[in-house]
Length: 313
Image (cartoon, rainbow, N blue to C red; front, side, top):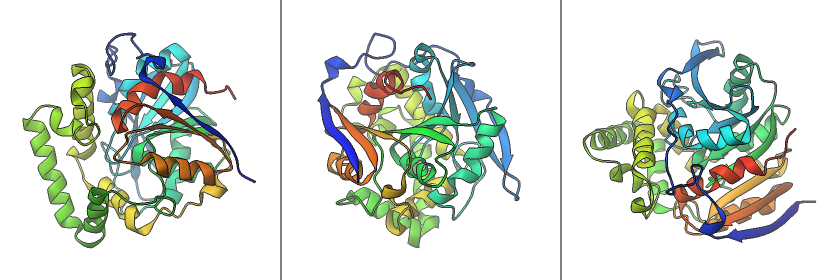
């Protein structure tokens, strides 16, 4: 029988930024994402790129970026990981950043690249923190390979189409384009990259938050750099994952065999709070912490808390 704890509503004053200053301040440490490691996996010469943040000898955790996204977004969590004694592994999921494309892959294939990532890092098991679209791979790992993950923290996490009450119109459109006219979608994404290259961060921030003025300049530029890294080399990762909007994830929440903590914004327009609560109700061991804010602000607010309360295995 499903066990879940009541949703906890917190306000912004309960959540301090990692540097104790302006909400959304980016870490001052060097971005190790500039020179990622790569590990080969599978039998077709595919490579997975990843960077490391936090403490080198700390407890391992893996950050799974959204759709689109890249390893660079993990720099937002660097200070929090250091303070919590966490070694944070940050891969470019297949088709994003410097990782090889894998057309047609599904969430159930996540272990094929996740296990080699852990092996290359000398890690047998790790907690997973997933943002937005990264929730699909995270839940698949918790269902298919619970031996590899100690727990899941989904921050502004997408809900499986089988659970979602209503897909936002833009996501529905993108999913339809990905399934029927992928070439057109790739062209549109390429145009977005060019626009983001010429303009300031506000063009990218508008996709994730209604209040870009509340995000520090450093964090805003990091989100922009993450977007450019995610789609600069290839748009195939985004096209592949947007197909899942219509076709589903092939993951049953009731099969997830590890604890799940959902961190969700009360004003999230990308993934409505109701979907997070419905997902919570279908997971065997899960709870929701509701934060005041939208899609991106929830990540900025939860980054300290997600490490502070995570139990040691």
